Length: 194
Ligand SMILES: [Zn+2]
Image 1: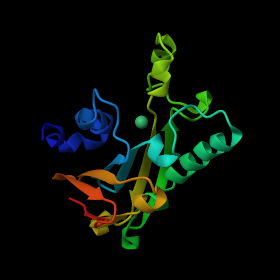
Image 2: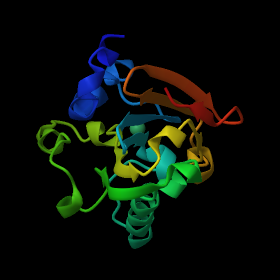
Image 3: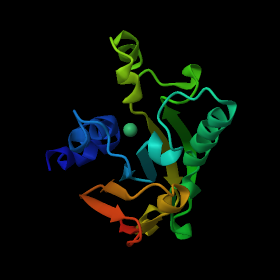
């Protein structure tokens, strides 16, 4: 696939990769029940990028107004920012989280990243659109691993964290190769890293 052809630039290309990987979803609403997890390893650094429909995280995609729903969104964001709720890394690799952030259109405006179509929604002509707006949760984590050679495989735990998640596309890039696997609930959750 063209998107995997510039591996040496993998970290710089990560945002681009995230966009390029979207053709599966682009132009159409995201698919409820299906998430995307990207793992990019270069040297001692492992980047973990997650995109999941909010429906699969909190069960709704409208901006929450009830206090309980606001709390649900905040707690979900915290959970998805914790690598232990995303995947299990081999302890021998000695990986530690350096940075972690979670964005969602459902978080309070101050916490939102500007990358979403915030303005777009304000310009729409009919309320009807509001009912069909979609929202995602995006997680971005950067880990530093003392023994990256030990990063042979990871076990995905997202299906436990997110009971509504049915499918997860896992794209992983090593320094010399890349792969994409599609995991299903109830299937094998182990992913061998390239
Ligand atoms: Zn949706």
